Image (cartoon, rainbow, N blue to C red; front, side, top):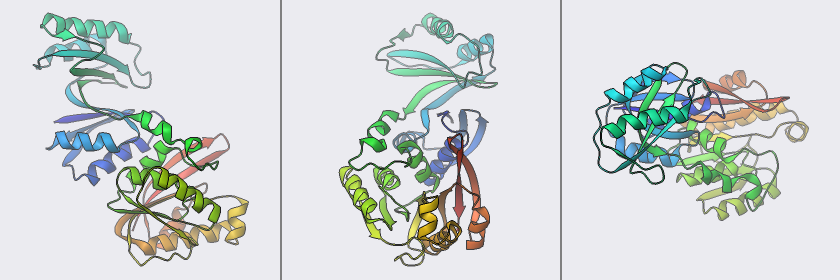
Length: 336
């Protein structure tokens, strides 16, 4: 079975990595069939039903999961040919939506929906755009048209209520919930997730939403109190510690995953004597407390790959995250 993931356009590389990480977390038997800009198609060997449900609850940077019925070329006649050749039988009503991915196509989506609807009308199917029992979707990508049934959708509105300024305790400069959850997924956690620079707990809140035991530490008591307020508000299971990330009160190899967004700039450097000391010391500690073969996701405004390798890590991926025109942060996925 082919499954297509209609990806979010808010980042170039993280959405694909998040899908692949989640598939691996859920022990899916799959291989990549097509990797397109804005769309990933996998060949799933078995277990689609429960897997799609689990992915829909977990993914942050995906819009829809589509059971693929056909793949064709990008032209109008190619699209109609795919639809005509689809062998599909169902009872009840349907809707059809055509979506241009990243404006690669100049096809009029409304007219194409009407033409596809005409194919199904002639086959005796009944359309219902308001409350259909089956949702059909056509994705127009860079050089492919991908047609199928929407089998799962990610409720992205759930992240709106968890934006930083809506939380009980707000502090500027924190990650938005969608990217925080995506980074949690990149770490491939099992049960325990650590953020040694937890601040107000934004990463820990997202970890709690997918059922993880969240562990946080910080050297600023004010922020720890704010993190407790936020984690209690969202009913997360957590432990918080007043501690230095370079000297953590945790046993060796005691956590399954680490995701952290360390402070940067002058105040961070003063506390640790230098930013270099803070980065190297915390990475060494993260390596110590992380279990073997597990992942840490570390955000920095400077290159830390060499420091991470010196600490013992293998660099798996690096994603660039543009905060504003003068600041691009590096998201490094590391493995012990």
